[in-house]
Length: 334
Image (tube, rainbow, N blue to C red; front, side, top):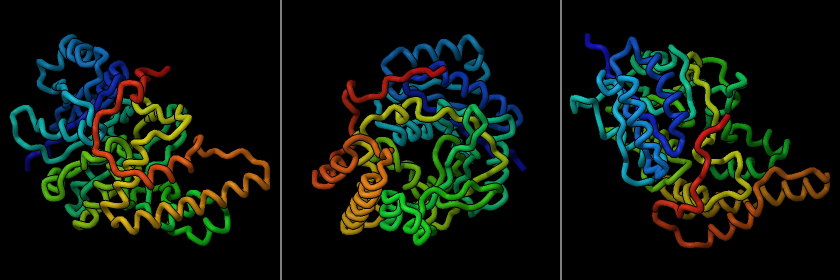
């Protein structure tokens, strides 16, 4: 029986040095697999594409037909960039059996890619498999989740013990799994997807610029009868939020609100989306009252509630590249 073919899609946006580190780590895990890599520069505009092409030549990757560097031509966001890579197929133009999407700031352990493959090969009703993600310090990251709902919007905004206990089965972040287990959805830093599932349900929805696109993809897979697995044996070190700059957000960007609203409207309808927003507002007011009474400092981004309300009253905007002043500027981290 032929070895399954894997296409590794590594998306770069202004993180060329780190992308090369991620590529090196992934190539180690690809050595005993029938796998190729395509590095997609998502219209970085900072010389990243030229740097990646030169590095591929210097390291002999191009000669080995193991790595291709391509330019997307536009920054349509995370989903659009990955879709561009997926459409490249294998170097002989045939379709791979699996797509492995890897963030530019994620570094798989040597056996991480194979561990995902083995889980997917074990059951054809599994559509996606994602890794155990840890930080550079070894601490685990939260990457396994339930699908968002009205109840989760209320609970997540309220941050209150009695409410969280009452709605414990609706809390989006799952307790950290200690073994391989089925989940609703996974963060997209390191995830392998069965290509036949993408042929059936479609690739990432490019209406999402950033955030919620993997949630939506896992939900579509679930509705089609395919599970998503969190694979504890697949370990990946992830720095996190390097391209998006999320850790440095002083204020939540408009594209996050766009993605949140679109997810709820697309999957549940406008009425449900409205109630979900009202539930979030109610929970946020409870949290504000708690902070006022206790004197504790709120961790909510500046003007978040006001921005959420204003955004909910505005008209949806089509996905389009952000102005240069709004794009994250981080290119490397120490």
